[in-house]
Amino acid sequence: MQIKLIRSDLGVAAGVADSEDVIHRDGRRWWRCGAIIDVPQRACEILVGNGDAEPADDEAEAACAGWRDKRAAVLESREMLARGIEPKDREAYRRGELTGYDADGNPVNEGAE
Amino acid sequence: MAKVKVKGTVIKQEISGVLTPVAQITEFDQSGGESETFDATTIDTSGAGKEYEATGYSEGGTFSFSVFYDIALAGHQAITDLVTTPAECNWDITFADTGATNCTFTSAGVGFDMTGAMNDGLKASVSLKLNGLFGYST
Image (cartoon, rainbow over all chains, first blue to last red; front, top):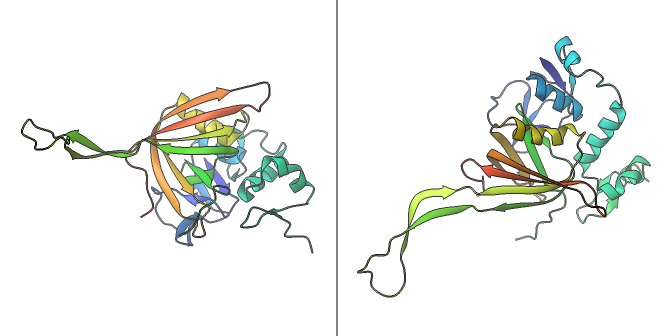
């Protein structure tokens, strides 16, 4: 079954060959956001459930029944994971009070003036 | 020379070719990596010191980490999948240094322990037995 990767920060495992869906950046290999890949059912369930991907064919859609439920919360959690938001700061992130941390670990809000 | 913060370190698990970060890790530990030796002491060894030589093999050891365990989280289920359906798995640790140095390794087996306490959140400890060596930065 097929899924579409919806993030640009997903690394490519060592055993995967280069292709047009593999981008070289900062000396590493990354999946192209929007890449459609074939995966087994359990991987489909995990990557869609984790907020890394969306079903890209009927088979994957059926395997991930109900995946749109609470999708906004899943994607928000996934973005917080990518930004390294600490559990104690999650509510502040949801309120838009911080978007991440600086090099010294101090909260920063990129959207604030 | 730098003192590298642990905050911001990302541990990723391979899911069908995709490296995706494990959520809610609180600490990690890599231990047991060593080059193997054998006792090469003989009765005519001079001096009191016992002698050892390298066998030519090295032990990869174990990589462990603890998480606030979310039983409904797909990423955490991907770890327990390795207990219920044993398989090798590739892992990537990206450190929080300025170069975002990464190390990789392959796990052959997984240990999973869950703990609950009245005054704490639900937690789990994951222990990964390495197949081969830890991919130390060189």
